[in-house]
Length: 201
Image (cartoon, rainbow, N blue to C red; front, side, top):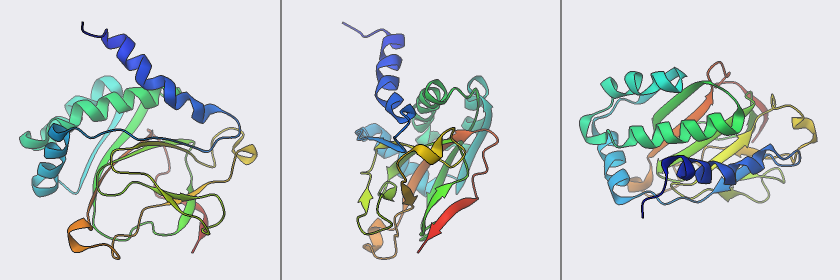
């Protein structure tokens, strides 16, 4: 028996609503990247642009993404849009910014808090985001495919939440074959995505 699409979307959204709790700053759920999605991500790394971005309402996203996404990687788009829908439901934002980026350097290597209210991250290839609750003494890392919600300093009541700092996992210390990530980032459309806060070495 097939599952109602609406019910499936609701079931996918519900686990992430925990990020809205006043004391939480991070919500992480491991999710499997299917073989077909893995193949699409691998194809994107070979022929896709360094950065694929769409901005606006959910209904506008597919038309912005498709022309710039290689045919062999098109399976990524439905997954990105479904996660954008999840982000919209959890955050309440209707205008979004969706970014798919190839990362091959130790970019954003310092622990920090973003100048956003709420951010969704998923690494289709490579390690997920790293975070610490004790200024780097203990570092945790999201596995490939995990969906992570992070509060930024603009989230209402952020000062009362658990202080979590995060960073992109350094790649230069890994084997050469593992020095690449394909990262999905979803924010509110006007988020200040490049600014950081509370930088820590």
